[in-house]
Image 1: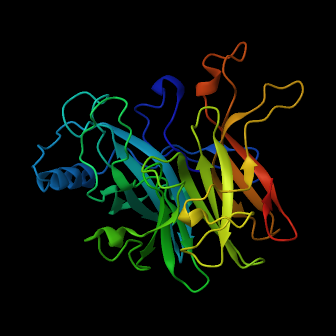
Image 2 (image 1 turned 135 degrees about the horizontal axis):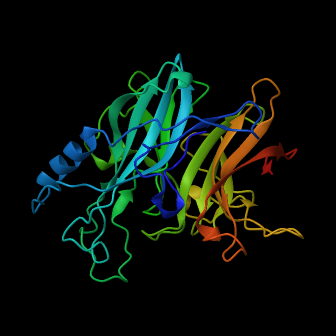
Length: 340
């Protein structure tokens, strides 16, 4: 299990990034430390090279602030790949992040031959947040929430199709979720010269350029011959919920259980997780952004995600700020839809 860097009061600072654990039963987890000590040099170099090519030219940022989000680990051939997100928090222009968009996100790639060694080799950038020319960098006010990026390079998910094609599924909030084809040898797109090289939109919410969806996860179920695209909807502290759509094709169109075309902007249904409460318990909120995986021996499927306690739980400081890992077994309906 590999995770976003997050701790109440930033207690994880100074202990590396993309912390991980392992388990033999999905209940008891052994903490194994971090997988990255600091942001690789290519992030700063690439960002400032991009800024130097802007019109007008933007000055380099010398002291960068980073967030480390949403790693995705897959076995590919005889190696393990980790696709990870690093977000540059510095404002694009000026010094006040309340009046300017923060800088872009990057998805990078690391590889290892053996997860147990925790020795990863960084392979550099896979994609970066990309604009489409419809927006400038600056915001006019704190209430100007028009989306800047066509695709936001966070929340990667990797899949290899039965035919051997490889895709990165990524994106959030800005204009939708993308699928980009990868070179199987490098694990990266062959080129990033035009907007089309960054992939195609496979899910969005309406036609707004500011959309409350993120955390795409994609799997292929050979029993149903469908690709399933899981999405996290709405804000993450309380209302976070999981939706799923499916398609016979990796790039869509993805349809909900009601037949609505999620790739064209329809809301995605069914809703498979949502805040809930049983008697004699505080309940769970902020319950989404999942990983879905199968036990290849038993063929059982599982859903893992974050979840939080509600606000103001007695005896727990900042109860809603603490993200905890949840694992649940998946059941499938007879017509090939997903249930927890």
